[in-house]
Image (cartoon, rainbow over all chains, first blue to last red; front, top):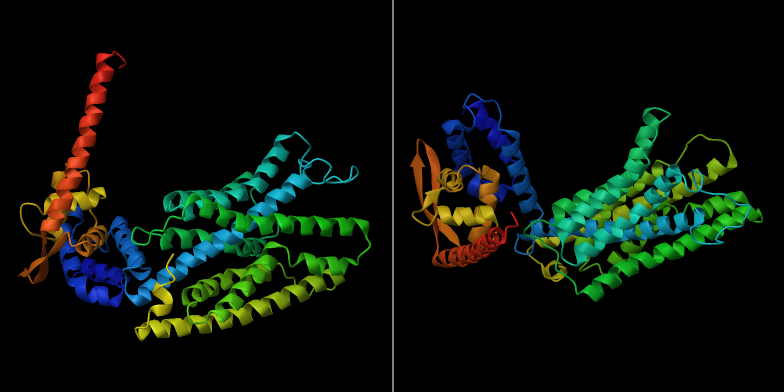
Length: 360
Length: 107
């Protein structure tokens, strides 16, 4: 066996075992014939990157199967697609929260703040301010991505989600004054949004297209995610007012704020999903698996805000509430993993009633 | 129907072909523009087989390696014909409009 054949067979191990058993020999044969005819010399050490990429794409399509796929592949596919959908719903909510807060903080909504209160970055009318306002409004693109997905336009949904993830950071690039620890914290904070995009990209492929909803129903779905975001912005504003009025102890306000920041809301959202999965344990397999996947970045994003060893009362409060949220997330993660394992076992036994019926 | 699927079906019109034979024929038909990677080719073949447009024909051993041949089914031939007619119709319309544009001196 040549080195080239050996490395191509190694790449083919990405494919599911039953598929490999059926196709490996003819794929190797076709690949080596191509290599012999000049696409690559037989002395080459490894297949070209485009060849590897084509096998990776095939492996993703097979492992994250659509409705016609084998049960296990379909369950994983559904889990990744639901992770993308849950992520889009969550980030749509955050998009509206961010936008509503920006409109208020920058005084775009008239009389939202008292005259003596100045908020926001940059002088009114400056390019700097415009850049920051845009960076705060751009998360609304998540709503566009969700809308496109539920209307059955996955390509648009993917492109818009990438824009929603990347553009705010391009407009206001992160600064890392404190070395690798700050970089690691930033990465953990970005992770929950970053996970949504690859889930969307790999989950909704040609064999697993989202069923298009009627326009009205799609709009209702986006609104369902947007309304909590707007309502939450009112809570955040109320907390800011209480903070300015200095009538409530700061530690109490910090405690409350930690439940309405992004990691706190991710924690609450995942707890709600866990309760939902428990209530429908027979049919919630793919959603439980999706939520279990999303728990990992949620834990990391909350952990990134903790500062163990700090002595002041505010940091202690942050660590206490943050620690509690991580404990809750771990508990829900374990529950979700147990539900997912149960679903995977059920699928292995050939019972698909709780999973096939859930598609779409 | 995607372009690779269209070209794979076209490659199988005259005779059954094996994996590399299909990739070669697709490259020839497309004038070298479409070079199917093996992972892409088998993805396309899977979909076409699932739609019953192609089916395995026979297996041969060549230089100690397995060659599995695929053939076009009647259903695949019908689907290819419908797609070819649709594309030809679109191309005809485009050519007619371009001719009109030239006649009106818009070029």
